[in-house]
Image 1 (cartoon, rainbow, N blue to C red):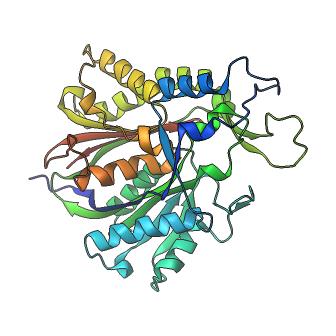
Image 2: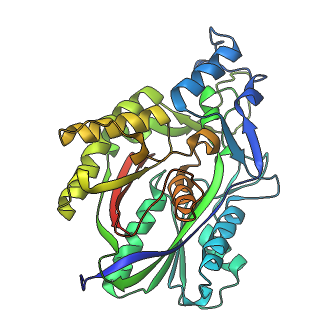
Length: 357
């Protein structure tokens, strides 16, 4: 048995919001081009093409009275209760998000106090040595929180860390932008503990490609030029982002695997950020090509995007939680399995973690 101290996943939790929004619920929207001109297609065709490209059929939105910190609290509570973990034993609470708490119909971003402090308050953790902080890092934020927690554990600074990804993207979308159909709300969480043995994080890799690509995802005014309000919404250069992801994500995963001295053929599952089904599949094809392999078995890439949409930092921990709690009929993780986690998002940031269960 390996005597190295590793960061091990000892519990997971998630919260899937209750309000389901189907693709057909967007049929009454007026979608516009970036310059505010009408799209030369009927809305039904736009919605149909969207499903074909992204794989999304429905998504979940938070209830009006809920904010991102509420979702994060519920996911954290779920992870603590799943394995009866003492909340006072946590050394760090790291909360990944991009927009803080956004009240229903407000579009105002609220970061003070931090979501991590709010969640610690909601959990009623009294231990002042439990350090709580936020991590805005685009969609890869939750996975980057895992990487940071791994460093705390390996350095001896922490024994247990709670890493949460929580987001309410439904509050920052432009109803006149067809990309608004991509986004969803949700939260996921893991608890890491330092343990000796084979199980745990083996390697990781992170990159930030800001000099040329930082603005592929940004905030801007509504496509509706008649809207004279001050609100800004999440915007995406979809085509260039797709190209960026295909060109760079496979190499980041390969670097993480090389650091671990592990071949792709040893990997049982790739838990990839649920951004766009076609894009994720294309990334895996490029990754397999780097190893001279054919990507001919989609079961290596479990997906929940069809009914959960893209909830940013929440997609991977939610997917992991459902897998470990056997909520899939045909997707399972077994002891000893080597798994890759990977994400790409605003910044432009990319990361990957190699993990053995």
